Length: 253
Image (cartoon, rainbow, N blue to C red; front, side, top):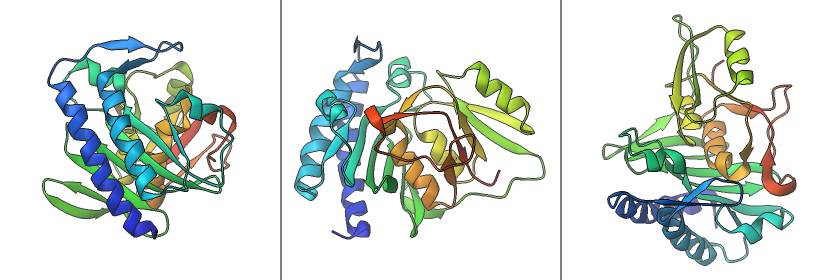
């Protein structure tokens, strides 16, 4: 299946999963906790139950690594596979603070590179999608528009940082990087704000997993940005245990 055709199918899958998420959201969800103390809710599980069968039907020969499928985390990464986080930003989902900073993340990885991604924030009705080499777009308010990174404005760079996981190394980096404004945001929306020119950089020094970042990374790369380790090399996927190190998601900065 061509990337463009697959992307359109994944938009539909993300919307279907998001309907299930918002049904749970309306009921004031409660969380249980995994061994690593991260929360999981009925919404995570309901979205997973929609996304995984849909991907198996669309691309039966492409393996799926998903946050909610612990067995998939021990599988050595193949050359081509999906990375899925059915509900990214579960902590923000549980806060019910009106910010809507939680997303559905679906990405396709080829040879260690996120080549295609969809990020949908259902509470905000903002869907970001991109194919590396072909461009990125946002669907919101009933309309589709092309998106891309911006040049840093004369007023200075805007950094977007984690709402729940900001740490001392992040603060040190921000202090030394001539940042004019800082926006705190949950989930993979941080990548998307850089991709659509609402921010210029997203530094992350705390731990993340590849399913947290792959879809947003693909959207950002498709929009003209890049995601690198602090010392320069591009972030790669299919690492042992699917765990990321520190990274900087760059727009125009």
